[in-house]
Image (cartoon, rainbow, N blue to C red; front, side, top):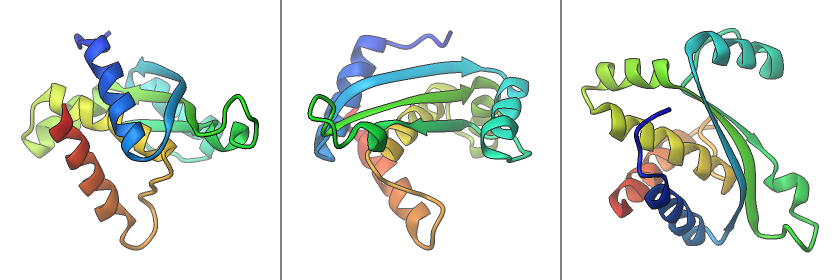
Length: 134
Protein backbone atom coordinates (compact mmCIF):
# COMPACT_ATOMS: atom_id res chain seq x y z
CA UNK A 1 0.00 0.00 0.00
CA UNK A 2 1.46 3.38 -0.92
CA UNK A 3 2.32 5.69 1.96
CA UNK A 4 -0.09 8.57 1.33
CA UNK A 5 -2.22 10.85 3.48
CA UNK A 6 -5.51 9.34 2.33
CA UNK A 7 -7.65 11.83 4.30
CA UNK A 8 -5.91 14.70 2.50
CA UNK A 9 -6.28 12.92 -0.85
CA UNK A 10 -9.98 12.32 -0.18
CA UNK A 11 -10.54 16.06 0.36
CA UNK A 12 -8.45 16.83 -2.74
CA UNK A 13 -10.53 14.46 -4.86
CA UNK A 14 -13.70 16.10 -3.54
CA UNK A 15 -12.37 19.55 -4.46
CA UNK A 16 -11.30 18.51 -7.96
CA UNK A 17 -14.63 16.78 -8.56
CA UNK A 18 -16.56 19.82 -7.34
CA UNK A 19 -14.66 22.01 -9.81
CA UNK A 20 -16.08 19.73 -12.51
CA UNK A 21 -19.60 19.90 -11.00
CA UNK A 22 -19.57 16.44 -9.44
CA UNK A 23 -19.90 15.07 -5.94
CA UNK A 24 -17.87 12.01 -4.97
CA UNK A 25 -19.72 8.73 -4.75
CA UNK A 26 -18.13 5.32 -4.41
CA UNK A 27 -14.51 5.19 -5.53
CA UNK A 28 -12.43 2.06 -5.18
CA UNK A 29 -8.68 1.90 -5.75
CA UNK A 30 -6.88 -1.37 -6.38
CA UNK A 31 -3.11 -0.90 -6.10
CA UNK A 32 -1.41 -3.77 -7.91
CA UNK A 33 1.66 -4.95 -9.83
CA UNK A 34 2.31 -5.12 -13.58
CA UNK A 35 1.13 -8.73 -14.13
CA UNK A 36 -2.21 -7.94 -12.46
CA UNK A 37 -2.89 -4.82 -14.52
CA UNK A 38 -1.84 -6.57 -17.73
CA UNK A 39 -4.27 -9.39 -16.95
CA UNK A 40 -7.01 -6.84 -16.19
CA UNK A 41 -6.27 -4.96 -19.41
CA UNK A 42 -6.49 -8.18 -21.43
CA UNK A 43 -9.56 -9.49 -19.66
CA UNK A 44 -11.75 -6.38 -19.68
CA UNK A 45 -10.43 -4.20 -22.51
CA UNK A 46 -8.80 -6.71 -24.88
CA UNK A 47 -5.59 -4.64 -24.71
CA UNK A 48 -2.30 -6.51 -24.57
CA UNK A 49 -0.07 -3.94 -22.88
CA UNK A 50 0.90 -2.53 -19.50
CA UNK A 51 -0.62 0.71 -18.30
CA UNK A 52 -0.49 2.79 -15.14
CA UNK A 53 -4.27 2.98 -14.58
CA UNK A 54 -7.48 1.42 -15.78
CA UNK A 55 -10.64 3.28 -14.81
CA UNK A 56 -13.98 1.53 -14.72
CA UNK A 57 -16.56 4.31 -14.87
CA UNK A 58 -19.89 3.64 -13.15
CA UNK A 59 -20.85 7.33 -13.10
CA UNK A 60 -22.72 7.14 -16.41
CA UNK A 61 -24.49 3.93 -15.36
CA UNK A 62 -26.14 5.57 -12.35
CA UNK A 63 -26.31 9.15 -13.66
CA UNK A 64 -30.06 9.02 -14.31
CA UNK A 65 -30.92 7.67 -10.86
CA UNK A 66 -31.87 10.37 -8.39
CA UNK A 67 -29.70 8.99 -5.56
CA UNK A 68 -26.59 8.98 -7.76
CA UNK A 69 -27.13 11.94 -10.09
CA UNK A 70 -24.07 14.16 -10.26
CA UNK A 71 -21.82 11.74 -8.35
CA UNK A 72 -18.71 10.14 -9.75
CA UNK A 73 -18.37 6.45 -9.10
CA UNK A 74 -15.89 3.86 -10.29
CA UNK A 75 -13.09 1.41 -9.75
CA UNK A 76 -9.50 2.34 -10.51
CA UNK A 77 -6.78 -0.26 -10.92
CA UNK A 78 -3.29 1.25 -10.57
CA UNK A 79 -0.04 -0.57 -11.26
CA UNK A 80 2.48 0.75 -8.75
CA UNK A 81 5.27 -0.82 -10.81
CA UNK A 82 4.30 1.10 -13.95
CA UNK A 83 3.87 4.29 -11.92
CA UNK A 84 7.43 3.85 -10.58
CA UNK A 85 8.82 3.17 -14.08
CA UNK A 86 7.00 6.21 -15.50
CA UNK A 87 8.26 8.41 -12.66
CA UNK A 88 11.84 7.34 -13.40
CA UNK A 89 11.38 7.84 -17.17
CA UNK A 90 9.87 11.31 -16.64
CA UNK A 91 12.41 12.26 -13.93
CA UNK A 92 9.68 13.07 -11.41
CA UNK A 93 9.15 11.81 -7.90
CA UNK A 94 7.26 8.57 -7.37
CA UNK A 95 4.65 10.16 -5.08
CA UNK A 96 3.97 13.01 -7.52
CA UNK A 97 3.49 10.55 -10.37
CA UNK A 98 1.20 8.38 -8.24
CA UNK A 99 -0.92 11.41 -7.35
CA UNK A 100 -1.09 12.36 -11.03
CA UNK A 101 -2.33 8.87 -11.88
CA UNK A 102 -4.89 8.92 -9.06
CA UNK A 103 -6.34 12.24 -10.22
CA UNK A 104 -6.16 11.08 -13.86
CA UNK A 105 -8.70 8.38 -12.99
CA UNK A 106 -10.92 10.88 -11.17
CA UNK A 107 -10.80 13.21 -14.18
CA UNK A 108 -11.91 10.36 -16.42
CA UNK A 109 -14.88 9.87 -14.10
CA UNK A 110 -15.63 13.59 -14.46
CA UNK A 111 -15.91 13.06 -18.21
CA UNK A 112 -12.46 14.12 -19.42
CA UNK A 113 -11.00 11.84 -22.08
CA UNK A 114 -7.48 11.51 -23.45
CA UNK A 115 -7.70 9.31 -26.56
CA UNK A 116 -9.10 11.65 -29.24
CA UNK A 117 -7.44 14.54 -31.09
CA UNK A 118 -6.41 17.27 -28.64
CA UNK A 119 -7.84 15.42 -25.64
CA UNK A 120 -4.46 14.38 -24.22
CA UNK A 121 -3.43 18.03 -23.87
CA UNK A 122 -6.71 18.86 -22.12
CA UNK A 123 -6.24 15.94 -19.72
CA UNK A 124 -2.66 16.97 -18.92
CA UNK A 125 -3.73 20.56 -18.29
CA UNK A 126 -6.47 19.36 -15.91
CA UNK A 127 -4.02 17.05 -14.14
CA UNK A 128 -1.62 19.95 -13.66
CA UNK A 129 -4.39 22.22 -12.31
CA UNK A 130 -5.48 19.49 -9.92
CA UNK A 131 -1.93 18.84 -8.68
CA UNK A 132 -1.55 22.55 -7.88
CA UNK A 133 -4.58 22.27 -5.55
CA UNK A 134 -2.82 19.65 -3.48
